Amino acid sequence: MTPPRVLTIAGSDSGGGAGIQADLRTMFACGVHGCVALTAATVQNSLGVTGVHEIPADVVAAQIVSVVSDIGVQAAKTGMLASAAIIEAITPALDSVGIGRGRVPFVVDPVSASMHGDQLLADSALDALKGLLFPRATLVTPNLDEVRLITGIAVKDRAGQRDAAVALHELGPEWVLVKGGHMWDDPECLDLLYDGRDFVELPGPRYDTTHTHGSGDTLASSISSALARGASVPEAVRFGKDFIVRSVAAAYPLGSGDGPVSPFW
Ligand code: PLP
Image (cartoon, rainbow, N blue to C red; front, top):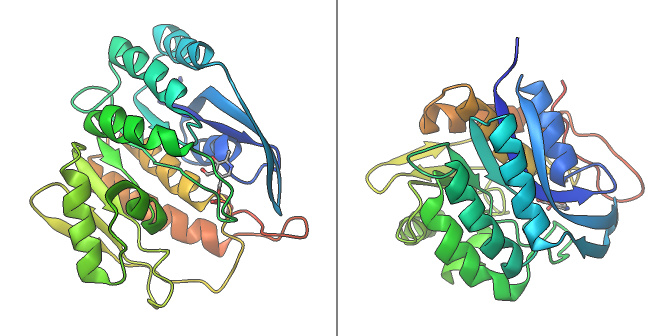
């Protein structure tokens, strides 16, 4: 039987740890069929990114239309979007195929840099991300570095995490998940879900490991997979939280740098 389909609009990691490679692994593990609109090829290994080669923006948009018009998708997510030109090109494509809040669930993971600090989104693309994709998002999933870039709020504690959720929600997404993993002195990883009315706290353990490459992609992909299978946003986020905790626990060393989380345990 044909499983639910999920589209990832994201970049390739040649080291196989993050990006579309993490997305497709996760989707396979979650029982959905993953489709890809590739945005960029990165030259990357466990030590970092040494090159970024963007796909032409009209080709990214064409991949979305091609996939949805034939295969159909029940959820979509974004990862590395690279440039304003790509965001501007995919916006009308998403609208034309019915991806976005109120229609096919759309998870926007506002990837801006790798864990090594390599830039994955041009500074000039932030306004397009906020102005075009946030209002169309069912859910946005920033980490605290991305929160600071997007809202200017430097979150230091759980009160700041709530302020950031409110500021992010004002940019137009239906739901906001402010990930707490980068609050390094907090013994827990508390993620905060907000829909403009209620806060839902999702606590989780913090593991003492540097092998967390691809963790954001894995979380957003597992949430998207659950949405494609018909879960509500709170149900999908709880599923994703459990999924990423297990995936970090199963992470493995790779190369001489930092290894990836694993969706197989
Ligand atoms: N490379 C690509 C293509 C990505 O999409 C991402 C994250 O989305 C990364 C690298 C960075 O992953 P991490 O911050 O987990 O190292």
